[in-house]
Length: 392
Ligand code: FAS
Ligand code: PHB
Image 1 (cartoon, rainbow, N blue to C red):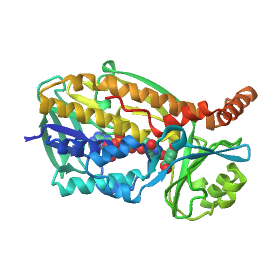
Image 2 (cartoon, helix red, strand yellow; image 1 turned 90 degrees about the vertical axis):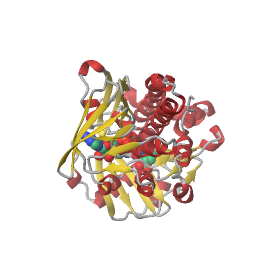
Image 3 (cartoon, protein in one colour; image 1 turned 90 degrees about the horizontal axis):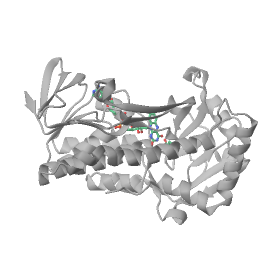
Image 4 (cartoon, helix red, strand yellow; image 1 turned 180 degrees about the horizontal axis):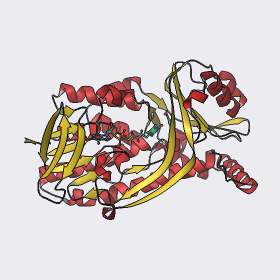
């Protein structure tokens, strides 16, 4: 039977970043990933890093390319009522955000892991967790056609919302809180110049839109779409036409359509599992919680969970103290709920809800009008967007 100190399920950003931080602390770890590395890297997901997340990547020793290629953004733009107005993140909070694609971050972490000779079993199937309440837990899985067993001290469930870590628990072991949204996001990746120097979030009677980017020559744009929408009914031409129709005239005029490199529809969901610890299993990232991507918090919550868990496991092995492990769930969930609140409120502010009546629409307009007239209201948005302080 193979043995390690920490078994990590999932090689997404949470699992890879945890593996890197544990290795730095001299803690042996093995990652088991359901898909191939190429499949993980092919997913187009998040694009915005909070300062705390970027600093954690520096701490993990993989921040060089992120610092060289990432774009520092000191503000975001809100487009509504035919106008585009700026939220001065840097001026209001003293902080900026970094534009750097999640798949680039995963590539850096994978390259670093490979160079360090650490064990990652890609295409590991039928993972199951055993003995979570025992001093020694066992992970069973199939790899290269062979049944395998991995003995370890702890398991980090970093296997995303559809993983086995949470799914394998008895329903009585945890409580979940959830809110679904009656729409999705249709996203397009394309090689064309961004229509503005910063991200543009648009609220429009036809629906929400977002013009983000991966570089100065590659955009990642989204439009709110119906849950019944199918990709095949969205040609590139139709997507760009609809996106333009939801933007203020200045942004719309600057948007240069280009062939889609990737196109996908993602549902939106708010979801929290409580607690995040089950004996020797700790959930981190999407395995424990989901947020609608409006506030760009999903990836950054995965990073803050990992920060708390890596420090707690280091304290256990280095200082023989389990205080951090005992505190992990409560500490992580406090930050999760603050991000859930922000993501939900920004989604409510910027999207069209089918069940909204005239009163709701006027309240939405009044919310936006007040936001742009109040430094205090803009500061609240800005401090949540750049990332709330990481409690020790
Ligand atoms: P992930 O889901 O990224 O990684 C989990 C890993 O576990 C995957 O590689 C999976 O293959 C693996 N796994 C699953 N089951 C397994 C099993 N049984 N055995 C072994 N491995 C298993 N966030 C933002 O901030 N901004 C965005 O714009 C944004 N867009 C998104 C778009 C989509 C379509 C989705 C689904 C999410 C988006 N997110 C966004 C959120 C996303 O970035 C997550 O927050 C982030 O990927 C979380 O990272 P992980 O927790 O590592 O989970
Ligand atoms: C992205 O670049 O994919 C992105 C940026 C900000 C968001 C959501 C997605 O709020």
